[in-house]
Image (cartoon, rainbow, N blue to C red; front, top):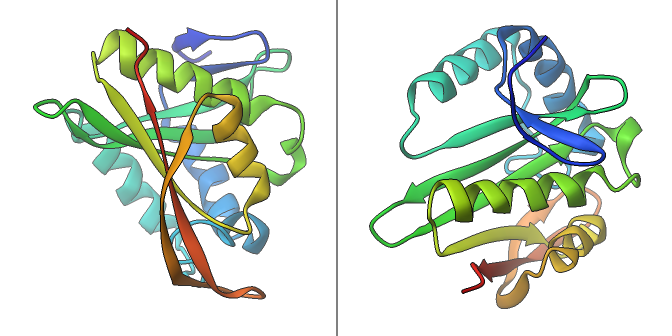
Length: 177
């Protein structure tokens, strides 16, 4: 059993628990998942993930990280977070990933929607932004489905294995007033 913060039709956002760390460790070392995350070349040790867990557990004002749980099975399927939360200026950066075996089922879109509800209704933020590499078409679709707009492009900004240097796209979504 895990505490649920927000529930959707397909997935819920829950408080990460220590037992989630082993899956994170496997996922962060899966090259297909790492490909479009920061530092795709990194290799992670289990101890690194334990340190990450302890950090997100303690740094609550600038970061909110949630486990994404599939409702029908109560299985952990990914993570989503609001990072660099700035209460003075009212914004945060969104980041997320879904385990490969759960891609293409609408889970990411609903998780992003729930994270926006949390950002706008619970944290009273006015804007959420996200950065995505241009070849990550699935993530771009998730953002666009959730009302994000493309507002910037850093040309040939990151190296992605198999793609070379790619553009980093910047999306933002404002709270509706």
